[in-house]
Amino acid sequence: MKYLLPVVAALLLSACSDQPAEQPAPEEKKKVATPWDPQIKALNDAKGLEDQLKKDAEERDRRMREMGG
Image (tube, rainbow, N blue to C red; front, side):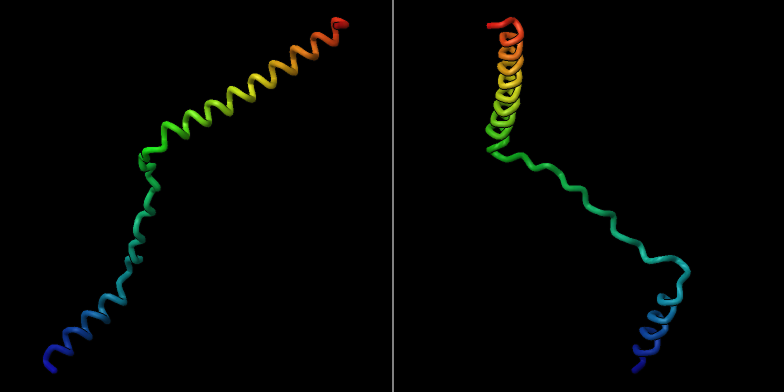
């Protein structure tokens, strides 16, 4: 019973403080290295190269048609 009064007093005093409750800082998602990262990078590079080759082929075909070939 003698511990009840200080506990209740502490709860009441902490509930009446003017400071807003501190929000935990949002955790930033950190990129974790995986064994597949080099493979994924190579795949993305290959996709980029494929797109560039398609654009070049379309441009070459367009120029050939303009030349009458």
